[in-house]
Amino acid sequence: MSRAFLDVESSATGRRWTGPTPEQARQAEALEQAARLPPAVAAVLARRGVPPEAAEAFLDPTLKDLLPDPLSLRDMGAAAERFLAALRGRERIAVFADYDVDGGASAALILSWLRAMGHRATLYIPDRIDEGYGPNVPAMAALASDHDLIVCVDCGTLSHEPIAAARGADVIVLDHHLGAETLPPALAVVNPNRQDESGDLGHLCAAGVVFLMLVEVNRQMRAAGMAGPNLIEFLDLVALATVADVAPLTGVNRALVRQGLKVMARRARPGLVALADVARMTSAPTPYHLGFLLGPRVNAGGRIGQADLGARLLATPDPHEAAALAEKLDRLNTERREIEAAVREAALAQAEARGLDGPLVWAAGEGWHPGVVGIVASRLKELANRPAVVIGLEGDQGKGSGRSVSGVDLGASVQRLAAEGWLLKGGGHRMAAGLTVARDRLDEAMARLGSLLAKQGAAEGGPRDLRLDGLLMPGAATVDLVDRLDTAGPFGAAAPAPRFAFAAMALGFVRRVGETHLKIGFGDGTGPRLDAIAFGAFDTPLGPLLEAHGGARFHLAGRLEINDWGGRRQVQLRLEDAARAG
Image (tube, rainbow, N blue to C red; front, side, top):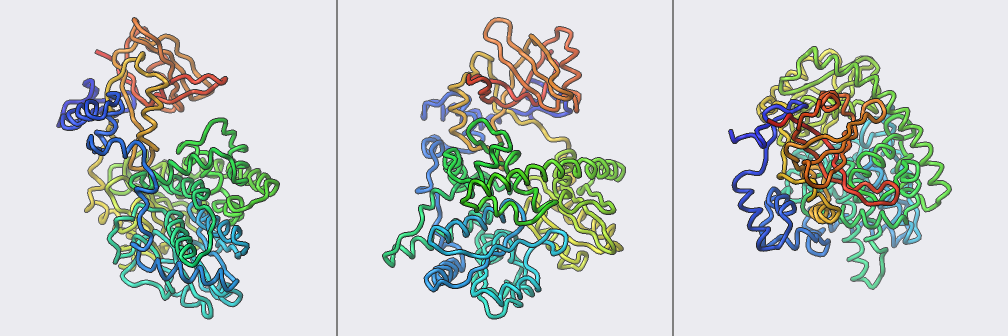
């Protein structure tokens, strides 16, 4: 094992610090010299495996260079042709969407595109509790009786019986969830995670797939002498879905999110403007805002309220309707947090009693709200660095959600579990899955899932190392450096934000903020001082350690960010960890 960075084997939060490998250090030096990059930026690109000759293109990703040919996906041509035929024939179109952000954004993409072409469509989103995930037989049969075309977005790949029930209507599936050996009887199933696909575009969320179909539709329209909407203006929805669905920010996803954030900053979509206002966003949107402020509010309707609220908000052109929907979703999100807190406490106690060191961390409870089990599973996953499943029991069944860690394909294991008969239903993708299990088979089903995950190495990880990109002095942490680092973004899933260490720092002021947060000032004693904020520090040993510093020096680690408070742009450290120096 390589030497720990700054010799920190166990930090305040119990983590081992790791730095660049010797190979990455050499690569960073080559990037610094060849591409004339600041050392910190070169270090980030080296970690991402970017060679010097590709640095310029990486720092300025464009859709022109990265957008794949939509026709590289199977069934795309047929889907686009049928969709365009429905528009030309003024046929009745229904959009059947999942109730999460990706489903809502995917539906809003289609509804907004059709509205721009003077055509309306019916939105249908199933109720999480009464209908569950994806198409169901009664809903599809009813939609087919009143519509000529049904477009299923972010769902449908495993819906053989419901799609067969849509007699009299054509069905197009635009999805990204793992496919089975056989496909449902739809006119087209466009999904980069079909078993007969290469997987090269498997990182796309459903909104990305929908966007590619609209690109192909616009292309077919141009060939016929028609003009379609400007799809660049739709990228705010694609960016929101990509980040909220925790899709990896690599390849074309980087360009989609980068451009989408620029579009969102123009505040042209009423739904996102209203949502940003109720979330009290005061700066330009970032992946953090999408994942932690906007996304949870869009999701709130599907979790504990009316399932279609989020999609309606994202699709509406009316600012007054948008404001009303955003207010309602904000209230539901507050309610969701309260429900989540109660379930989280109970699930954590149960999981800890069962043990957090196996290949699977899981908990199940009577009446746990199905709208929050996925969020709680995410919390357990983060705590244990293990795949986690949380299940709400009602009657003779349990419905649950799972979240995975990097390198462990949870969706494939859940799908295999369902194929083997351990589950009543199950599916998903690498990082997330949903399942329905009979109550009397719960324990044995989770044991079998644990054994499948163990074969992927799920039990091998300990507390996660804190990976650092290098060492900085407070004086080097300038606004210009943070702006340059941002060109290597956006940061998120599979593209972690740069983290730097500050060695042997003296603490100036240490102040508790609210109940759990900590604000400090630090420096090396000779140059400029830097401020830092540690959110939730007093929920961990980090807060008490620094509060009682007694004049000792500390290694500090975290992410640099810009604080726009009071209209002044200042650098601060988002402090994540610390260790005594020497």
